[in-house]
Length: 626
Image (cartoon, rainbow, N blue to C red; front, side, top):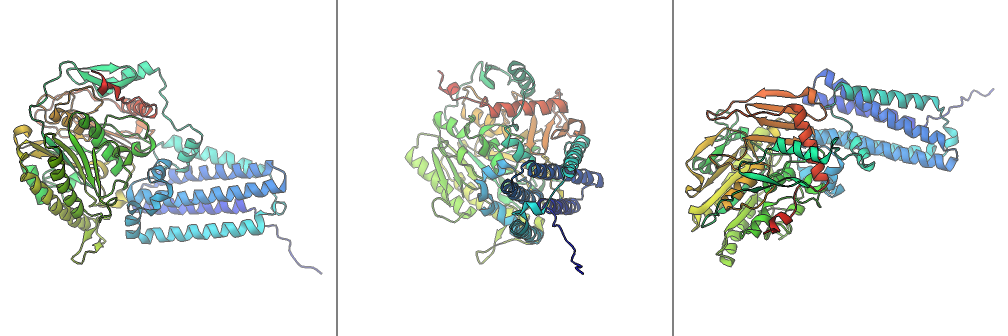
């Protein structure tokens, strides 16, 4: 008598789908514990991700049923296992990347880092190695899943006749999964949606902004939101935010030298001049000395996060795109860039940095600045000591070559970058387990290098006509359990200082009104006496009669923040009804202004995104016109 039990193996796509769902739940639950998320938010996130995964997996099973030929079914099985493996990789890496460095693994992020180059960059590896204990289990699980997938396909997937599937089950699964995802999204549109959605919408070409109104009406609404500078007129309906001055002022007889020092991850909350009553203040005597002689902006935000978007805001006076990174996704879109603009106005322009390709800035540097001093490209060490040496050399060389031309330069530090490294006495880069201590040591070391640059400038014959701007490309976390895709203080509150050697800055003072990187371009253009048509979204920070009301707008992939008129409005992406409004302290001379509601803020960001996507921000012809 034969007691053998005939066992029909499970379809490999079904097993892979179940495993993916289990992993997804475990990862999301673990991230929720780390970030101390609420139970309701975690449940909705899990519900949405499971629904999305079921919908995609069951859809692939239905495709397997539809094709009848064994060869085609084997191909569909292979495709499904590959897609589910990619989904597993994204479901593991995206939450971890978001928790560690505040970035999602979107197509725009991959494009920005030249695809797999992200995983070869210091930007990725430095924090990953520091948090290896969180990353190692994920890598191990992914490797095991891929090995299982290969073995299962070879032993079972190539023989579709041995794994029959009835159409009713995947049909119900797809319907239930779609309903779960829809219900969770409707209940809370701002939850952390599956990053695969970005890849699908981009592949389908449905990820662009839609006006929902005529271009003429959109132009009128974005203009009302941005506000026309006093004494200016709009120029062109095709480029709604370009303006010209009705009565341009005269340029200064001697244009000042202007230098912008961009400090990596400069936290306004940690700087004594910016937050005198703050906690865990750091020691930065060189920066504090410059602050004592200039204007300190105690409510200054970056317009985006991380470094690439921050650099774009500083160098163009523009806001960010809420989904894609301007520095990578829109290389063909024209912006009013300070480097090329001031170059055409007679300035000798240059940028000095440790590595232009770090958080890739090539589209915003090459062919924009007259001189590009890239330490890595020169074969030098990529540290701030070397970069300061090259900065001082660049100034001396530029002045010797073109002594009659004023200088405009941007200097970018490498540190303090998460996990905030410092160089020990033996020349080794190290970081401890406490991010607060790491940050204090790292920025103090950077401050020592900046002191050499400041000291060199102070010996410069034109120091009395020199302006120094110190600000951060963005802020960053000291407690990563608080990480968020929203533009919270930990990511965008940098503070800023405008100082220098002469009367052009005015008396030392503190400015408590909202300001942002978008104001830097307007301020620099006013200092340089460049009154040609412009597309800058900010105001002159040094003017006694600013052309626009004080405000700061920051855009990240999780939502938008507007600080203006005594309130901070945080609008989660796709959820204006969930906007949070926080009162802000105002200065004694604050003037009442009308503050847009959350719906108007979201609408303005959508119109601005459409302008970026359709190259309607700026055109060089406005500078070429007589």
